Structures are given as structure tokens and as C-alpha cells.
Image (spheres, rainbow, N blue to C red):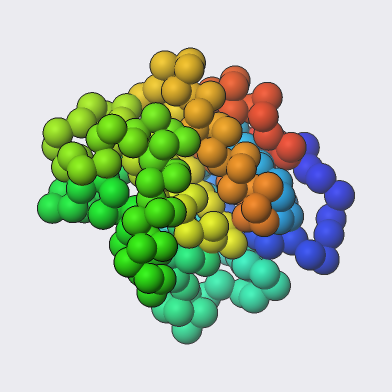
Length: 216
């Protein structure tokens, strides 16, 4: 594993996290930190646990060992129950856009609590950055898989969360649009987020400031 210097100001800390499945496969113990402003990429062969690691950090899957900390707070039990989209936002491989909402509305939900005008303004800005502005009022079923994926990235970054988790966020993109996705994730990091991306994409790896290599 390649890692940056340990910092007490890490937004995301993963300490000896592991998960084993009944087949004997799973996520081997892994430790790393991602500071505010960093984009880290998780790499490894199929079955090494990249998606499992992101699911554990998101709180969707309990680890068998180890701990996850966000802004110094261990994420378990009641802390997980209080986690909001503004704190941890996710781009899953199954993109999970709300089908009854337009692309813009999917983003606006992520910044609920702000004024209606601000919600719309934030959504428009991020959709434009990802070449989706002309599709803002379409429903997910009315756009391509690549466009849905960019909308899922937009939804994750629009609220400037503490942590962004993205699972293969360029898998449905051509090189030009992959560059837009990477630029959006880097901009989110520059705004103070810790960004963790599971990816096989060399474009993503070249943009990352930290690489975490998982072993089978």
C-alpha cells in the first residue's frame, strides 16, 4: 500500500478493517488515512474487496475487524445511525438514482434544508460541470447509463460532504467524460472533502494523491 504521511487531521481513517465471507474470500486487513483535500484510489484484483471496503466505510456493511473513523469519530452503532448524506455521500456501482425524480431533483434532495433557490442553483452548477445541464429535467430512465453515472457523481459532490465514496465512477464513461468525472471529484476534494474511489481506471490512478492496493 502506498500512503500519505499520517495526519491527526485525517477526515477518513481506516484501521485494520477486514471482512471475511463464508467462501474464505473477503477483504484482508487494511489501514490508511485520507485527509481533507485528498483523492485516494483503491486498487486490486476482482475479489480483493474494493466494493466491500467502500460499503464498510459507508456503514452499509459491518466489518469483522477494525475501525472506521470520520473526522476522528469512530463510525459504529449510534454514530452510523446519525450519518447523513452531507457527511458521507456515495456513488455505488448500482447508481440508485430515484426514478421518480428528475436528474436535477435527485441533486436537490442531497442538499435538502437549504432554500429552494439555493438547491436549484447548486444542482445546475454541478450538472453543468458534468455536461448534464441540458438533461436536468429528464428522468433517469430517459438518459443513458453514462449520463446516469455522471448524475450519481453530481449528487454525491453537490453537498460538499466530509467524505465521498465512489465505486468505479468512470466505468460507463468515454475518456472525455471520464475526465469530467475526475475533475468533479478533485474539485470536491479541493473544497475539503476526503474522496475515496475504487477503480481500475488509469486516469483515476494518475489523478490520485494516495493509492491503496488490496491483496487477495
